[in-house]
Each structure stands twice: as C-alpha cells, then as structure tokens.
Length: 123
Image (tube, rainbow, N blue to C red; front, side):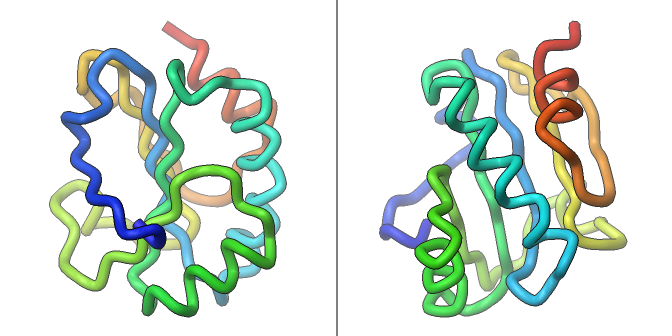
C-alpha cells in the first residue's frame, strides 16, 4: 500500500472485504471517495476491510489519498492483477468478498454509501 505494507486477500479471512479499483483521473471514482470515507467511519476495520487499488504511480496515488483524507487502505499496484480484477471494463469497479473468502458481488460504476452498506450486510 502507499504506506509500504504488503496485503494478501487471505490476510482478511473472517471479515468482509471491499476491493475498489479506481484511478485518480476518474471523476466517478473521485465522487465515490466521500462515500468510502463515510463507510469506513460507520463500519469498523475489524468487520470490514476496504482496499482501494490503483495502477498509477505510488506518488500520484498517495497525493490523492492525502488530499481527499482517504481513511482506508490505498494501494498502488503497477503489476498485473489476477482475475477477476484484471478483467474490469471501467472505473470504479468493486468486488465484495465474504468473510469466507468467496466473491459475493462485483459492481461496475460508482456506488453510494447506502448501496455499499446494503451489499455488505446482505446475506
């Protein structure tokens, strides 16, 4: 991540995970950031991991994260992401992962706080 910490999806077993693929130049991604910040504020890190992944240079991603007060994990990954993450058609896209590590839902396009919360809480 932009703080230098390594992350593996298996590290998050036992909690919900929201993987967000985004870009600093993407207007819908920028519009989604306040909703992600609010989500982090109402769902504790021990229940939900929010991982926002950009394939842009770390300095660009870090500057945006600081400017927008992003209070969740922000990752700059210049490598190729595994499927299904590498198969997205647009930004932002999100992957909701259940506590057992299986995929619950994949979305394309910006989400609002209520939608995020409903997806996470749905069985």
